Length: 154
Length: 219
Image (cartoon, rainbow over all chains, first blue to last red):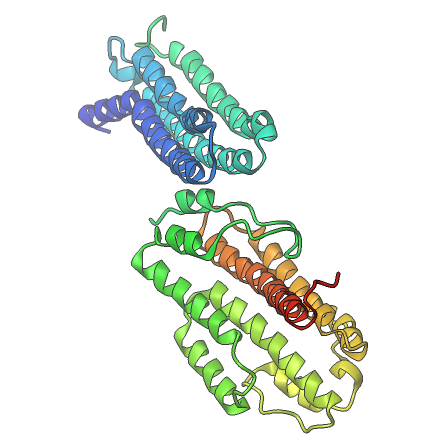
């Protein structure tokens, strides 16, 4: 493969966690936010926590930024394929976790609206999905650390 | 991609059973909430509403008219869930009409073109048309009719519809199907409550008559 092509893949890998994580956050927060807006039409109080729950999928973007910055050191062509693999796969995990966490948040909002006492438990599925995003994030950092050009890499 | 999160979340939870408490949302508020849908979805919802309005028809419509309406609905309705709801309701109507004719010693009515119609005609002389296993509510419904308890018979019918649509609803979350099934179950709530309204009005009229005739209320 040509060197420019390999370099392009590497650059894609650097930006992918942020790009895909942001898309996941957009989809997730949109789902949760719409559900929160709908629920606010039907309840008389507790609006703040509805909006708070709907914002949970924002964290995927933050994880994406951190992974991107960790790989964005002095770029070396040998590390480009590894960057592409780690960046895109981590980004995909962040995308899906954000998206489906938003669905969990929407369900939590819907359940809380009718039965406020289950608020804590209803958020648990969203927190579990967040846990998987954290796994993807942490292990992306660890693997990126082993790449030739990454911060602290060999 | 049409999203239904806002609409579904804005609809109050329906009771567990249709006879369990008041209607959680008024017709006017429900209409207002449903107006969030886009034009295409509103047309489908309109089809559902029109069908339910027709379903509350006066009894003087002929079998031919009902068959014609069925043919028209089959041709018009494209949404699979709406078609399923309408089909299920037609089957129930057909069974009830057949039972009434059977009990009255009348010949089979002219049914819409459904496979169930063929079965009923084939088993016309048998109790419950040998459909007890397929329609579990049928024996209970027949028993209520035999006991001259039309309200209980109606309760069995609504219970079957309510449970069927609730089971279907379990398969969907935040989708257009959820909206359709919410509206379908709200219709049952509304019908049941309307019966109570009629009874309430009747009771009110009786009280007024008592006052006018005797000058006092008898409790």
